[in-house]
Length: 302
Image (cartoon, rainbow, N blue to C red; front, side):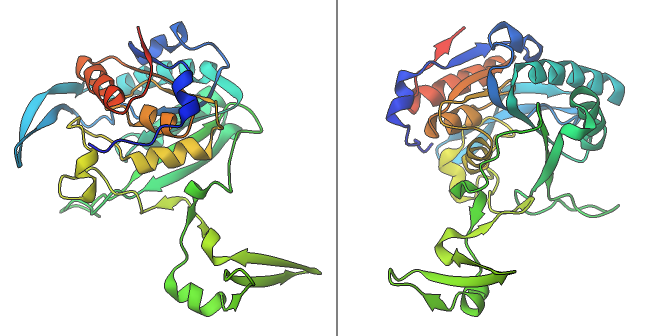
């Protein structure tokens, strides 16, 4: 797997990795201390997920990572609400929670989040398109997942100008609109609004919208294969890097109570944030520990 560049200052900070249920987050994260919490809980898929082990050029089924079966939707939502409420208490006044789910329960989960945070604290949602959709005989093949964004307070951190929230302009847009070049050789366009002229540079890119198609999944046949840990449902580093840089600052505490393969923690370290990660599963903790160690990221285990 690839090794991220870790900021030197980060190596002097203290991070924590704990094997614990997400509902016990308050035992190792102080109330009001986290600027960002990313949650990637079970999606209510109604099956168990196993790791994938690489053996030479082939891949084999490994141990069970976690069970995602439930007696009812109501039982799942009650389980989720208890943990979301704990996460809310951990957030700072400028903190945000990103809840990553898919079509199976995201609509019902939003109602839960509205109840816990208040509907006015809903800041929007990201539609993540990780790859091609699956075939379906009953409707559109589902090709996206949804990430809900909620804020603890009225003025959450949002780094709108962060490069991670920018994307290159299409070639057609560059040719049509960015026809001027300044003394430094940078292409730009001027727009007049009222009595003011605003200058936009091509190399600064465009602001991303709410549909993210440029963060491919961890499928084995993609260039991201070197990044994979074998842990099921692992999310790509680019996706978490964007989330971390968008809604936290250097030195912020980033929390992931379903850390799985540890992607959020690696992204936090690379961006010079502190982290507190946890997972109830043995395999998740072993996978995350190995990944952090291989990346030279310092942390404390509990």
